[in-house]
Image (cartoon, rainbow, N blue to C red; front, side, top):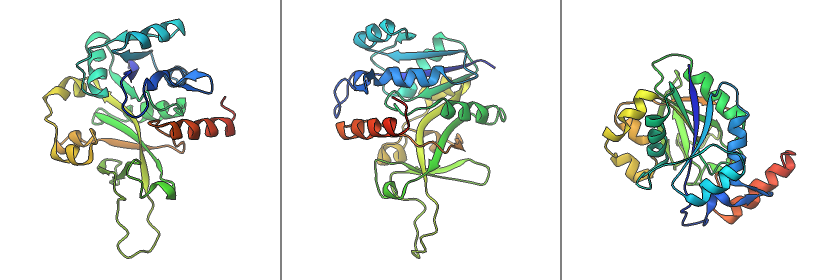
Length: 244
């Protein structure tokens, strides 16, 4: 089984300009993500997919495998799909370029999930949601059935603790995905869904079109970077973990 990790990385960002190249403790963010992916077992290749000449130049200078993709890609999934048309593999792992706390364990957990059977066309990750993030709309929550299939993703606190027992275990969704090749090929034929539009969560397009997403659990949380405050938080975590 051939597996490729793809790191979609675009220079445009409204809240944090030139985000992929923002230094995190002296390293560009995209480099930290790339190094984490390279350390994962079971991958045949790691590719940074970008539409930026600047990211291309910086990445190649740092020894990364960087490939130019179309500026017309509307999402990270579209960019991963473009790579799938040019690089043959059975499974493609989408590692978000704004996850500098990514670890090889995240990718390995996804690989193990996808190896469970061909019925798993899309995989992703969850972790126990910190209490401070339950009501935070920037922290996406997920609920799954007994077989590990996602029932729903939401920016709201799901499930709702109607009686206020306080015993609900919430799970935070982490932005790592795995796709079988055929699923990516069919992605352009999936119409954007009303739920996706309401929550601004692309993964809901799969669920609303009847494509199950299987969810593996990991003990390792991450912090997606969108602001300078996120950068400081990530740097504090890296220092505390000795991952400078």
